[in-house]
Image (cartoon, rainbow, N blue to C red; front, top):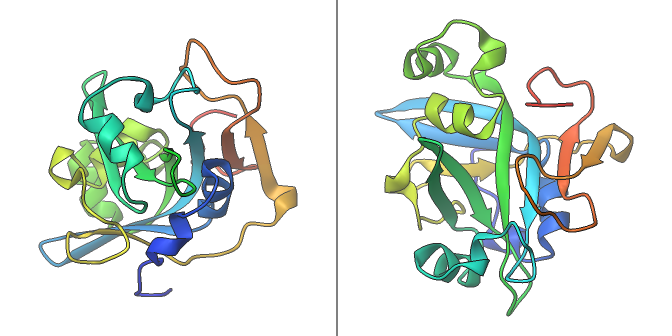
Length: 194
């Protein structure tokens, strides 16, 4: 595995394309010298104000961050859980990718401690579970993930073949765009929903 974060330019592009390309990459969190990592297996793309499910429709900090530079952690709370998004968009257009699920690779015992459970399949299969297992919270909001300075980054991983990538509509949104913007690795046990 690489020890270098993906470059900022990786996140410069259409959110759906960046989302798809994030499958197989490695999400890394370092806490007090302990490395936790997951292979990203499920993501969702979000666009600007034209997207009824986007945080860019509302004012405030989340909108500002989505319109800002790419490769930035966009973290917000919902249902008493933190959700990790990475700002990804083309120049002049807002967008982000929600990291929905990951397959644990390193630091599994520490993840179990943070989650308070033993079942490895329940550790990171869902956006709130993932952030809790990796101790990702609002303190990391607005921090770049293309550097290691803040203990959260994404590294190169494996390229997931197109034939193993499934698409569906996003989960838990009351109004969605007509195109499916959720991408996940087929038959991976850590995907939150099939």
